[in-house]
Length: 320
Picture 1 (spheres, one colour):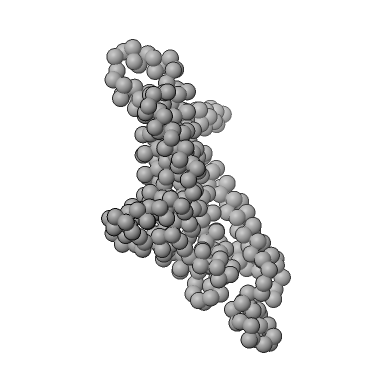
Picture 2 (tube, helix red, strand yellow):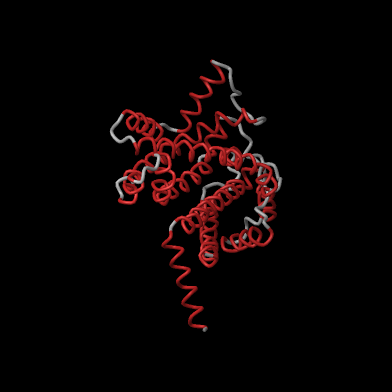
């Protein structure tokens, strides 16, 4: 099992390098001179050239890329913001807990409600429970997150005044952003859970468990759900990554000072290092989500366990 996990960890290295190379190349090819944008239209050519030299923009693309990769991986330095001059690493680390906290709450809501709705629909196929759950799932898949966020603000913050419209504070500040962020994930996990439950529910071992007189709750929790988990884990991992990727929309709507809002400010002000740093961090988070999915596979899927345990036994027998 340890070998499987180490193998997946090593695969993260080329993935993160590819993300860094791609976003740095895109930002390098974006039209416009950062030095001119910083100094404004009144700057003289000499002032612009001096700032370009200070920022290293007069160097070749490959030299700039090598310096960026070296600073990022050996010193965890993403450079400084063109607008504020503050270290991007410092800004990102100060905002990361807000984005991560919101993402964890949203994913927990998506996972719990999605699985419950999927089990309810799968165990009541073609009944009103199934139709109700699938209607909720269809609405969740079709509804844009930003529109849902705005509707939640209008209803619960403006009309009813039950919850705050934005900002961060106590737990109640997380309720509306978490609902808006998790609704699409609930829909995806519910649909996949229903499909997985329907594939497993007619299996012989489920029929045998019921014939032994087990309660339906025990049959679902001990026999149906464990064997339906593998495709559910895949969708849950993608939803988890999607929550962080969509943080730019949710944090902008609810004025949450996280990585998403920071990235949006970098885009609007054409602060390229900020955009690069945010994309790299979100890419690393996405890679970690996929790593957790692979590790969950290793614990849930007996075939992966058997594969690596078999290889260990073969090596042990060869040494003997």
